[in-house]
Amino acid sequence: MYQINFSEPIHIYFIGIGGISMSGLAEILLAEGFRISGSDRAESMLTHRLEEQGAVIYYGQRKENLSPEIDLVVYTSAIKSDNPEMIAASELHLPCLTRAQLLGQMMKNYKTSIAVSGTHGKTTTTSMISQILLEDDADPTLSIGGIYKPIDGNIRVGSSSLFVTEACEYTNSFLSFYPTIGIILNIEEDHLDFFKDIQDIRNSFHEFARLLPPDGTLIINGDIDRIEELTGDLSCRVITYGASSASDYYPKDITYDASGCPSFYLMRKNGKTESFSLRVPGEHNVYNAIAAIALADLLGIAGGVTAKALLQYGGTDRRFEYKGKVRGFTIIDDYAHHPTEIRATLHAAANYPHHTMWCVFQPHTYTRTKAFLNDFAKALVLSDEIILADIYAAREKDTLGISSQTLQAEIEKLGHRCYYFSSFEEIEDFVLKNCTKDDLLITMGAGDVVNIGENLLKR
Image 1 (cartoon, one colour):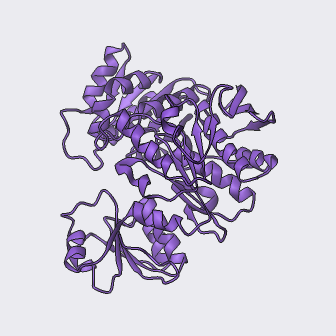
Image 2 (cartoon, helix red, strand yellow; image 1 turned 90 degrees about the horizontal axis):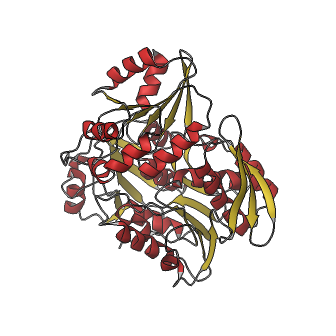
Image 3 (cartoon, one colour; image 1 turned 60 degrees about the vertical axis):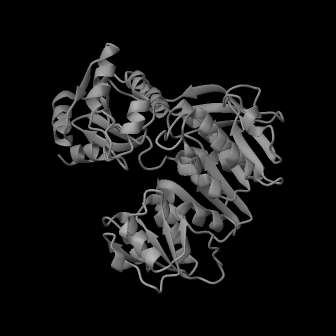
């Protein structure tokens, strides 16, 4: 594998530079004096930001974009061998690294590299950690999987020895990392277009935990099934958090304010108790916050600093994000695209002021929709009214015989009314006719369903 010498900046070309993670890595390297170029399908806020910092970006992926003066090519798992730029890289004999391999090499440059993993909650927990470190003036370098307003983007380049990143299990990319502190928030079935089954996923997270050095630390949700299979052979320190007193950290007396935002007492095995309040709704965020608190304790950050930071934390884009009001009803947007995430979001919404809860859900990928068809239906019926958009295919081309109408039928089998429309315009027209004052409309999914709320706010 090609090894980068970070004291000698080179010219790196990114195929798909506009992605949330790729753009972040490119921005960090620009700050370190590297020459950066790359390509993407279309202009975006992220590509414009990179261009302002000196990157050269081509729109459209073509062989002629690459030249012999490039020292290294970086690509994501979405880029296949028949991509014209990958073909050009091969013909020019240019060394190549995956995005994960590049990120792993970058992590080696920091004394403390923190990797946040889990099927759900990575972006929120990474952002909470970021808020705490910024409040503590720790000057960290941050790589977040979403837009985080306090840093005006998804990347912050710091000058300290602290590096924080999300660690995604898809295609086993996090196995290319070099963390000194790892966090595992939860482990569930997902990405079944890559993993065989839940055991395959558990094995992947186990291998991630085994990456930690003997003087490293794993912070893990103690409620994960058969946790000893994941931690029993580790040489590093293990800290647990969860719902019960069996964990090193656990909450007590969770209460909610009028907006569904929780407060709780944090119980520690060492007997120290503190109260915390959050400005983001839902019980799931209590546990995301406890993972962040456990890390803050490990880093020696004062409890008062952590409590202040968590109270200030207002969420990231597309995580129960308030968009505005139209004709008296409230629009919230959420990235939930897995049944567990949907349940968490709708449970949180139940505590949010509303008359009728409407959920506009856009399923994400045919593989996931087919694998969790019944689970999606059972989760979505937590909403008073359900509207389905067409499945967002993302990287997939085979429909597997699945459509949103298949999911609609499954929901109706449960005795719950469900609407389906084939276009966003039809959904928007229906919403404007049927949502009334004090209703709550949640646009939900990992695709472009967010556009529905934004279009409604313009009408």
